[in-house]
Image 1 (cartoon, rainbow, N blue to C red):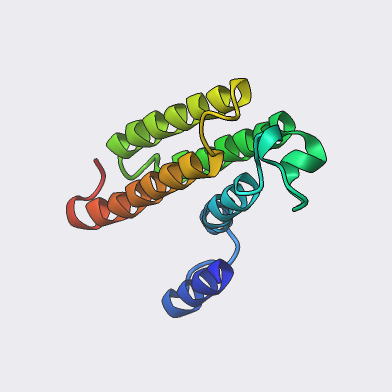
Image 2: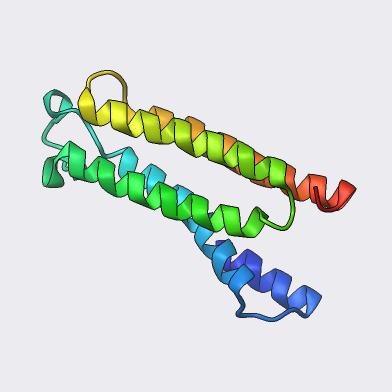
Length: 144
């Protein structure tokens, strides 16, 4: 779906199909779904059932580390895309990813404290909202 939207935009506005911005946009649209998909299958050891989860296959710490890494790769794509648009957005994105990083660290220390997917969902809503608001602000005010 994301590639379709990018392709439609490329064709409609006659812009270069393959460039850094389009590649980063594709990844930054894909990563939140990947992060959510993996995090929803990470459980505390005592919460495991017969259902196969990433935490059952790899252990909750390794699975959490994978999502942690992908989250930082994702935020780097966001930083690069936003860099020339809005410096306030960069700060907000950084605060959000630092909060999420802390939640990953807490979860690895005590996986019974909360379900990591709940924190990932909150993080993603905030991150995507910041990205949308960045575009809106750019269209209204230009570079900030």
